[in-house]
Each structure stands twice: as C-alpha cells, then as structure tokens.
Image (tube, rainbow, N blue to C red; front, top):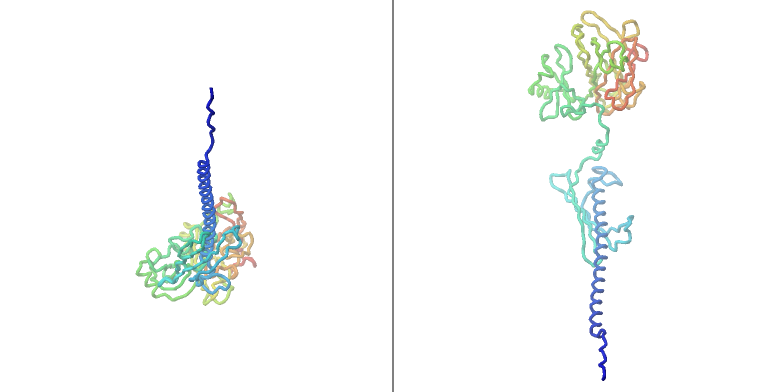
Length: 422
C-alpha cells in the first residue's frame, strides 16, 4: 500500500515581494519623519536666534544714552527707519550652526504732534532650509525722556520722612497756601504784628521764585485764593533757596536718660533770632531770616521750640557757603540770657549725623556750609539746634539699626573763637 507524501510549507515569491514593499514604504516614511524633525529643529533654532536679534536691537534703542548729539552712543534722534540689512549671528553658541543669513529691517516713522514718542518695529527675516521665507517682528513705543531723569530712581530716599507733604517739595513749608492748578504756594514767614513780607514757592523745585507784599493782618491760615493770586501776580521775580529748621531748649542735662532731652526737649524757649552769614559770592543780596520767637516771657514759658526760615538769594551756580548763628535776645521784661562760658549762660548744639565739624554735604548740617557741599539750586530743611546749659556737653549718639531718631549733636556756639557768637 503506497503512502501519499505530505506537502511542504513555505513563503511564496509573491508574498516575499509584498512584504519587502511594505517594509520599503515604512522605511521611506521613517526617513520623511526624520527629515521633518530635523527641519523643524533647524527652524526652531533659527526662530530663537531671530527673536534674540530683534529683542537685542529693540533694547539697544530703548537704552539710548541721550536725546541727541552724543558721539559713539545711540541717542533718541538716531532711532530712525533703516533698510533691510544682512546680519550674521556671531558671538553666540549657535554661531555657524544656523544655516542661514538674517536680515534686519527697522521701521520708526515720525508721528505728527508727538515728537517725544516714536513707534518702533524691528523685523528679522531669513530663508529656512526648505527655501521658505520666515520672519519675526517686535513692536514698541519709545518715549523721548532725558535718560538722566531715570537715574533718580537709583537715588536713596530722602532722610526727611515727609519727602513730599501735600504733593509739594519738602522745602515748601507745610503751612504755605497752595494755589490750585498753577504749581505755586504763598508763604508768609513769621514776622510779628505789622509784617507784610510773603514768598512765592515753586511746588516742584522748592525754590522761592517771587517776593510779594500782603496785608499785615493776613496769615498762612487765613489766606484766600484771591489774596494768594494777588500776591503772585504782583510779586517781584527772584530765585532763592530756603534754609529752615527749629531751635529747641533742653531742661537739664541733655545726655541723661539716654539722651532723653536731646530726643524730646522740654525746656521753655528764649527770645532769639537767626543770622546766616555767607562766605560765597555772587548773591544779589544778603539772606533774609525770620523766626517765630517771642519777646513775651509768659508766652515763651508755654512753648518748646522756635521755627526759623532763612532765604539765600541764589548766585548763578545755585551754590553757597557760610554759617548759621543763633543770637540771644532779651525779653521785653528785661529778662536776659546769653551764649557763653560764664555761670548761667548757655551753649548751642546742632543736630547732625556727623562725628566731626566738617562734612561733605550741607544737608548733614556741618559747622560751616560749603559750596562744594551744596546741591545746586536746592534748599535745606531740618537744620535744627539744641540750646543747653554751658555746664553740660552736647549729647552724642551712634546710630543703630531700628533707631528712628538720631539725637547726635555737635557744639555749634559757646562764644569761643572757634564757635563764635556774633
């Protein structure tokens, strides 16, 4: 009996060809994906570099060094429209790996009636690996503001805690009457009955820009808008810097109890006046000084401070030098006091953060103000004094963190040749 031979199994030629075709199509698709990924990565690098170029160009314009006329630096007038220019990326980690050339175009049209503003558009374009045009663009509005004004943001805050009371410069006295809408204030310095002198302040600069006459009965508290406007319209133009402060009196040893009498003096006031003697030149006239001291001893017994205001008429540089002095005056009752070294006499100390008589800034209240220490065209406030018995020493203090009041003082007058009392 014959057996039938079993058939052999295997892959036919047709099936093999079909399998190879499918694999070939798959490989082609994989190559295409890789090419696309490579192109996308290349484009991403190019777009990143183009954006960096655009940002760098825009920031260089925003950081202009002057409004005009500064050689070697970008100034505001140089922010203008520039034609398409080739720019090869250098100095970066991508240098030589971007496979293209970038072109920069600046558009900065002039806007009518807006010379201080410029709309700026920075466009960077290139051709990618596939020959397609690509571009990015940044737009901004750049203001033509003097760059030096931005430097004020880096200045430390004023040591005066009331830097801009009532929206005015700190040198404008608080009680001055502010005229609405014109940026001016009128101040009548203390001058007793019958006084008619008034000063016109610029609220922004803190300088006195005019001198005028007001009625003898008017006060800073009773001024009306009409009176203030009349003062301003009839004022004589001038430029002057205000030097102001207070004179206080210690009761007993000012250094006792941790400088308690220096920080909060409780002594009654004496009659006095202030003199400011200048050593600088070019001033149109001598300073005018006013204070609110009283010649009535019963009234003085109820008060703890004397406010003073001295007007320095500015020279062309707006700087000055000299020394302020406290002058003792008797009461109307003939009750007298004096500054000196004899028994019962007193000495004058000045509040200052300095540990020596000489300083580099007038605002620190040195013994003698100097022209080099002046802030040109600026006044001085809080130039304060403490009057003590001559048997005590002027209190000193080293400022420490958290201490909001520095009660350090230096000897200012004791009738000696160094600390004279004219």
